[in-house]
Length: 189
Image 1 (cartoon, helix red, strand yellow):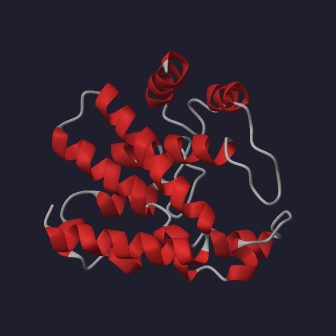
Image 2: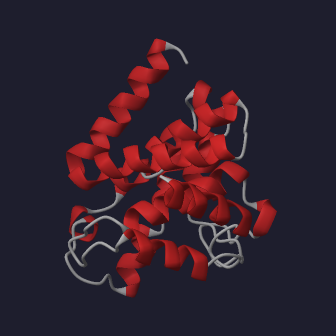
């Protein structure tokens, strides 16, 4: 990566953090977990770099979500959830013209990290292997960190509760192979 690319990514993350302090640790954690999964899958150095940066930028579209929804301390209404569901597309729009980002798969991480293995995700209802591999990795890392983090509207899950949720949703929400790899990573560390 060039220095300018690193500076741009840092600037984008700082902009997101200025709106939501939770996002800083979340983005770093997702990046860390995703990189651990990629390494366990013996992906190339390039893919590991992409998933690391994709983890940092996956929620960048939340910059475009109204603060009253982003910081709501209760359950979102159906209408509010529809707004939140736009953040992958907003993020894609924000970073799509950055030459380094558009050439290497980072856009896939941002746009498709809420797709589900069973095709019931968003924004495009992609299914199974139609979801880019790195986005499937980000999806598990994102979900695990979200579950194990305290939110305004709920307490955090224990590690075991979060792993049980991942087990429960293997093959529906999550790629079953990647889910098993991730469960092994967490249980071994």
